[in-house]
Length: 154
Image (cartoon, rainbow, N blue to C red; front, side, top):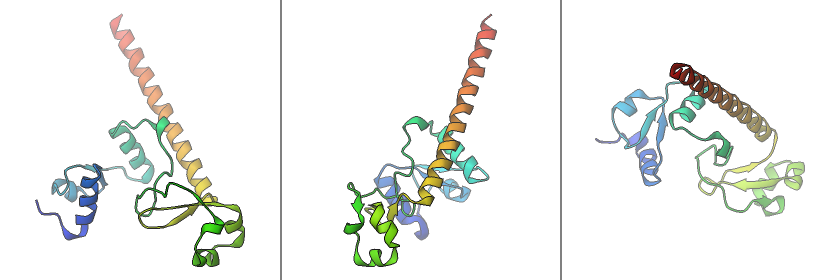
């Protein structure tokens, strides 16, 4: 079918890279605009995260948290940079304390710049707590299923 102009680049990129498009747009999935699309139905970000991890059976112990650009999902340049390697404009915009004391990562695609500031720590804490909760929930569900199977076998 014909892909709408507003999502053509997204679909082409996903298909070229063998990725799944995650969307809350039921019409997009029903329209079959993409070979691999998943309709996310969770009411909020936490439910959506849990839904995707479960639906794709993602091993959260091997998950790389904040391993891609949050703006475009691009990969980071392979080597981090020091403040000395930043461009003149970036050094002017960022506080000197950050430029002097941080290591930076740049997205290879959109060139957005990242460092381990307050947002990073908050995001890592939030994601780690969420993944730990999910892992405990999965383990409890697995134990209940095992106990039920054992009792049925008796």
